[in-house]
Length: 159
Image (cartoon, rainbow, N blue to C red; front, side, top):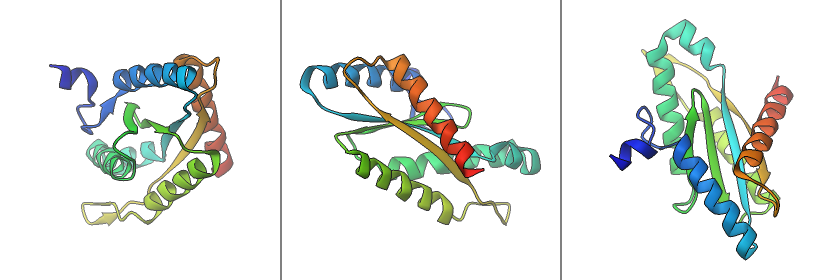
């Protein structure tokens, strides 16, 4: 039963509930021990167009593939979760700003070179990623709002 409570049915990765609980724990750990944690929000670009043109099965398969890429490219101590729809969250511990930027660039490159094929058609996909770091006065809700705003700024830049 716990598996269902904390995992996304479609992708098999963690869900929003697990993400929020993990973030709350990390906020407390950062406050207590001085650790750092980056909170990343990712939004799939053009998923609606893929769903409209190729059907929701194509969009769902794309979300599953994206989750596989994310899971394969984080450390076992980090968290990746599907927050809902086409939004994902990541918690990356003990990285500095340059390392987070490098990780984002690497992930975006993986998405850009990914050969996602649905019914013999190559469907390109990308994502917009924004992030913030846990600060001493932060709350999980505040961090999620900041990461979400950063993701939308990244999306606006890419347009």
